[in-house]
Image 1: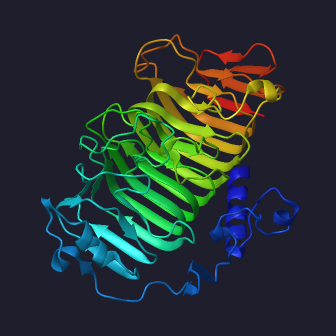
Image 2 (image 1 turned 90 degrees about the vertical axis):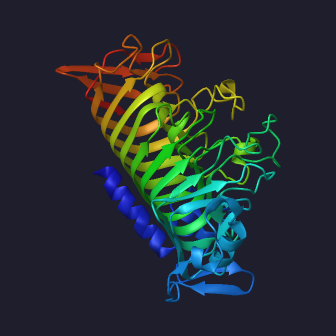
Length: 442
């Protein structure tokens, strides 16, 4: 398959230290000059701070560090952040978090070559009495500028404690000093592994990421006692590549109250929830087994000028209130990225996308646009094995597919023995009301 070949080619390029970018130098195998720091370095070394270099030999072999033996209380009352941070400091170790409830008043920062294993009965929650700013999270990696390598986190519940007194989204959307509302934050990491986590009660994003090269995210569940705006499950911004994401599940009906998977190569960095993120390519990723009973949107692909390419989705099952797949270019957000009149040929660079197995339905009644909204330029976008679940669908009158603002786009849909062919023009949109089994765009 084309996407598989492109994924493998992208991963080989990453291992050679090159990237697939859009400058002449990049096409010869050299990273762009504006690429993140970790892409400007080879695989042999990983720069941490000025004058300090870590090799790729991996962590020094040490015994497992049990935080309860090193000062953490785990009674839900004592502030355990200092004790846990003291264990984490320095990296190159494995840290075990036993069952218990751990109150975290200060952001936990993880160094390179660190493995955190939490007991399933461990819950770490973000203190709701401590004021929070833009750089405060329940947990993040240590070095957002020069980057980190080889961070693994598995097990436990990581709780944003939305009901805490100080855990709220600031009313001024453009206050870039305000709390982002993110539970787990990862920026500028080579080789990140997250597994077997429950992420709970986010103010805004459950997990927020950018500038990742080589990552595995498996067996993640989202739950929340409070339904709040902008609660993305896995939120990816720019310069994310070469990863596998599988077994992602919303555990609470109504969650996530935004995108289960947000792939925002472009986004408004003037919004407080995006402070510290960046725009850039998202590429070479496989997604498998995504589930939500009643989410806002299953998958968002947001591209204005930055590419989203070489993605494969397998087995996506979701009840949706707004979209199953959203490619509207953020036109209807409070912070639009462009004006349509400036781009008569459309915007977006969404390329080489394959979806195999997509079962969706409207989880609430009412009028809206369509399950699949295409308003961004796409090339080689294919859905196979599509099913609109009639037994669960609460709005069967709403179209399955809506395409506009992509003049010249060829459309082919298979519905039983019938083949629907059309072309998007600059005038009326193309709407497909019935379900189809296969869709090809571009």
